[in-house]
Image (cartoon, rainbow, N blue to C red; front, side, top):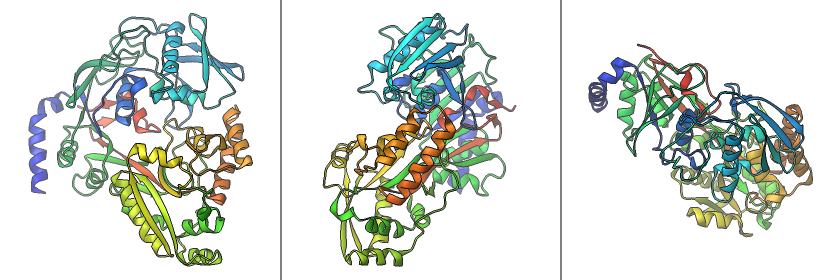
Amino acid sequence: MTSLRAALVALALLLTPVVAAQSRLQVVLPEAPNSLDPAEARSASELLVVNQIYETLFRFTPEGALEGHLAADWSYATATRLRVRLTPGVSFSDGAPLDALAVQASLERLLERLRHEPGARLLGAVTSVEVQDALTVVIVTAEPYAPLMAHLAHPATAIVPGGHGRDLARGPIGSGAYELAEWLPDERIVLRANDDYRNSAPAVPEIEFRTEPDEDALIAGLSSGALHLAPGASGHVAHALKGNLIGETVTVAVLPGWSAVQLGVNAAHPKLASLNVRQALALAVDKNSLVESVPDGLAQPAVSALPPSVRLAPQGLDEPYPYEPDAARDLLAAEGLTDLTLTLDLVADPELEAVAEALAHMLAGVGVNLETRVLTASQYRAQLEDRDLQLFLTRWSTSTLDPDQTLYSALHSSAIPAGNASHYRVAAVDSLLAEARNSTSEVVRAADYLDVIETVLTDLPVISLYYPQVAVATGAALTLHGPAPAWFLIDLALATLAD
């Protein structure tokens, strides 16, 4: 505790002028951004910064519903033509108008990057963008595509100014409440309020983003008031801050993230073709114990493939496969298997490697010998398409907060084997996923996804293990004025700092 107190005192002295002024919001990110071009934003840290500079056509409410942002009004002219009427009088921070031509150029820029940029894939269903008048665009898809508005609310699809030769990665130009003031790579990014922002000026004139690799210094800074916000804080930091160390000076929210860790099962492999074997594997996993093996400590047992933070995800499902090793052994014995060896593939990752070790211990208890192979990212991708694949650990991320992003690419038969490495081929599931993708009714979509999840829980092409959680630490001086469904969507223009 001595070193922590020393760090607290040193950091408080260092940042005393900032704290006294309370004119600059101090945010500590999990990793340093490499690009502020929305199309290139890969990490949640980059997306959070991008979200303050640029604006999207749509956005999520704190409850996870969709509403217009740059879009003042919208409707479907036909099932494949989304007509968007833009808010008038909007301009980029360099003075250029944000009109229909700008939106068309921005979205077409993403379409051009479709083959190699991660953000561009969000517009994979879009075939063209038409300008109807100065403030109206029509976004055309090849087929009815219900997730389109959710994808257009993702920071990676934010509207950027057109023109060639712009370095938006280092010189971002958006229409948001903030603009770039300073960037010292690997040290800090400073944003200042955009004086020309069409809405009321943000209450906090400046935001400084930095990383703090020393966790004791981060804890000290938050507890002293020198730092105000740490989204994506580590489990160590979250648990320390939630303890008796700091009393009431910091609020820590531990929330479900937008991903799920799955034990993938290649149901087409002879060793795993029997449902009895797959059910035995599920019954042999003690999920409550498994989450304790997660090094960061931020995890909760999963039931279904979708975390509860995702829109339209089934809520309150009962666990159909509680930890019952005796029942697992009985199912394997019914298949004549008293000594089964299986191979588990995973990409090199300390968290997944710890989980794999825990799984190997649990499965050994029911007579399954698990041989683990830790692969490079390229080796792992190749192995997922290999017919000899047996078991694999995978993360399903749903950063758009729409189930289609993961369920269609991981469970529809058209995605075999690149996305659907389980070789899961069920006509009823294909139909449900297609209907959910094409339907304009959220009631229909929710019912379809519930049917998909229940079918998957019966067939077990994957065994959902846990949902990684996220910790957001907020200093006493900071008020965020409403939660966000994902921390990279936090709107800091709404934040206030107490004197």
